[in-house]
Length: 586
Image 1 (tube, rainbow, N blue to C red):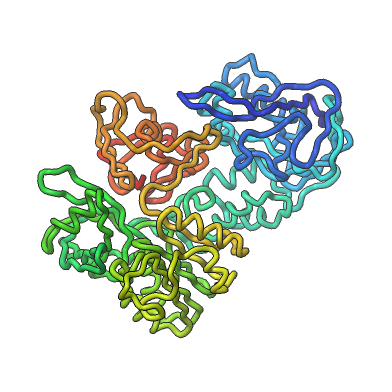
Image 2 (spheres, rainbow, N blue to C red):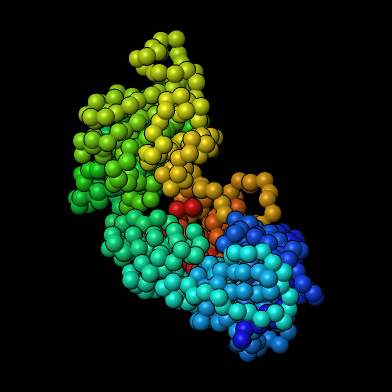
């Protein structure tokens, strides 16, 4: 008979770690006597990061005494105490290989249901003073699992644990855990897992993404259940030389470049919405790298990129004022997951300013296929002088059977004609979407300034649009993800403090920063953090894939090796180091 050995609780605390403050509830300690278990946690217990831990499907974390004994031997540790793994229940029995998702257990007067394995993060490494612990739990098949509280009640150490129902499909915690994190990911098992009603929403989404990846036979796409959305691998690695064949003024502040490959080989057909990284080499100046969306339809002969002139933009000023037809630039292969879905739903393309470029490529694709679904074109500009591609967009829309268009000018010139050049004075925002009665069941594609994106995303959520139907693209660095780290004011990117390192050059393309690698960094993630480059991470040991980023050029080595590799053309920066000069999409 299984038995509850210890009930452990703890409130979040601030912990100093690597010069930062981590807010975490992983410190748990045993308590005496009965304790009430409620829908979201146990009385006296709480989670520090409710986005990554806690919630209805992760109310109570369970870990086994047998795993304690295993880790004591494996780590040569004799000082492990109940609660050390952040668990609420330390139990005798209930091995991860025996317990199945959907199993129900009676403990004391409470009833529980198994919902998912534990998703480990770096905070367990802090608590255990073992940074690789998140990866070790997965590699050794000892993650532990979460309970959902079906019936609230009281529990106490030494209570018996009785299984009262067996979950459908009979898939154990360890089997479900390996199915997500460890290759291969058999289709039949993914389908079985998705038939388990008790499986938590996050794990269901991950398995659905893996299943969709297998149906698409995109075997080079890494782990779609963990990493960024699936897209074809880049057509080439590194950079190819392209000649500027034409330079076109699209408006008073936007210039387009038509780029033809010098090597004579066709360029790769890009998916509508993708971008390329361009390396510019101004005379007597260091090379500049920038990411630019492709602004035209798929063309195997040439690419078009369109750049807004910025008052203090080194790349945009060079392109506008100095770059000439016949000059050579170096271009990376098209990449990115902000791409037009092949669905039957209506399409709503929303943009502001130079954010028009990727959605304009989508409009080209819709016109080329003579799409019969509803297409909405919603764009915001300052005035007619700064309204790039106005005539081009109207021509593309005219080729569609079912189209709608609305253009906003925030500061129209006196000669801008309402009802002809634009439709509304003001900004494109959530209130206007409500007035236009845009379809709630559409796929929405948004690109523009940060404030525009935030307002429109919130506006669409208020309209009841599903988050899965809202697709966004940001120019510049993407938002960071640093779970549990105390908030601080964002800092501009910079070279690290101290003398430059002796190693390869690491270029952060979106941030416009070139830094030499040094031996003081354990990973590319640590180098990026030293430069205040925005990064995303959670486990820091090659498990979760939150840190997966585009590898435009160069070669890396891994330590430790990731459990499942990234997509072709990507890199896990948390556990990799440069073996050559690198260009990263960060």
